[in-house]
Length: 234
Length: 115
Image (cartoon, rainbow over all chains, first blue to last red; front, side, top):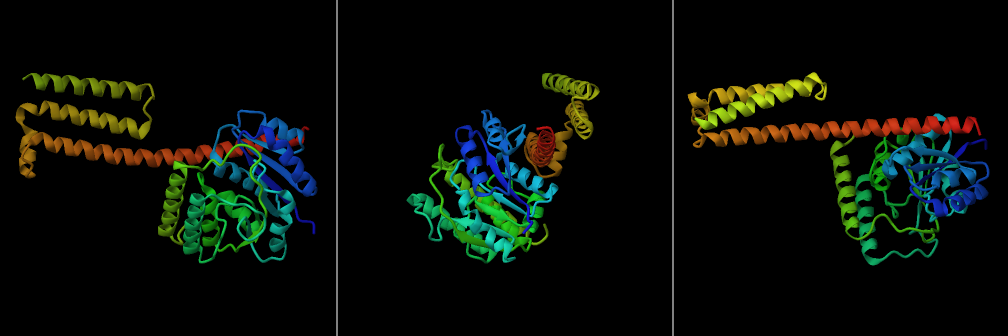
C-alpha cells in the first residue's frame, strides 16, 4: 500500500520488559518504525529499547502518559507517517492484533480505531469495582460523543492522518485515554472500536488502583464536563 | 502609639525588600511593579494610622469594625493573585512540556542520523 506505519510505545521504567515488547512489535510489523518514548525513565528502558531495534525518544523529564504519547504523535506528524499505532510499553497489548486496528483505517471507515477488551475476544476479566468505573466512563463518553464506546481507557489504538494531526497539537496531559476520544469526536473524527485480546500486564501493576481510581474518575469526569462547557469553540 | 511605629517599620522593610528584589531581578517585570505598589499602599496605610483613615472609610462603607475592611481587602487580593498565579503556572507547564517534547524529538533525530 506504501503507507508508513509508526508504532508509539510510551514507557516509564519498563526496562525488564521493553526489549521483548519491541521485539514482538518488530516481528509482527516488520514494515513499521517503532518509537519508544521513554518518559523520564530512570532505569535502562532507553538503552534496552534501542538495542532491541527501536528508535528511542528520551524525555528529559517525566511528562506523564499524555505528554509522552503526544511526543510520539508529533514525531509521526513531522516525519510524515500515515498511521500511528499506540501500544503500551508494559506488554499487555499484543502487536499481532494490530491488523484488526488497521483494517478500518485502510478501508477509510475511521480516523481513530480503539482496540477494546470488551467486544468478545480474550478472557480479560476486571474486578467488580473497576467494572463499575468502566461503565460510568463509557456512559460519559457516550453522552459526549453520541457513540457507544466499550473500552474507553484502552491505550491500544491506531490513528490515521487526521487524528495524528489533531493529537500532535492537542492531547490531554494527565489521564488522556478517555478525554482524547471526546476531543477526537468534537473535531469531527470518526471513532471505531474493534475487539482485541489483551494479556495481563507482564510486570508492574495498573497505575490506577484503590483510592486513585476514585481520583481518576473525578478528574476524567471533570475534564469531560469542562470539555462540554467549552463546546465547539476550541 | 506603638502600633504606628510597628506598622511603619514593617511597611518600610517590605518596600525596601521589594525594591531590592526588583533591583536584583529576582522579581520580574509586572510583579516587581505589583509588589512595590503593595509596599507603597502599606506605607500609606501606616502613615494614615493617626488620622484613623481606615476607620472612616470602613464606617462610610458600613463596616463597623475598621480592621475587618482591611482583612477582607487583603483576602480578596490574595485570592485574585493566587488565581492569576495558577493560570500562569499552567501556561508555564504547557510551554515546558512543548520544549521537552521538541528537545526529545531533535535528539531522537540526531541519534538516528549517526547510528
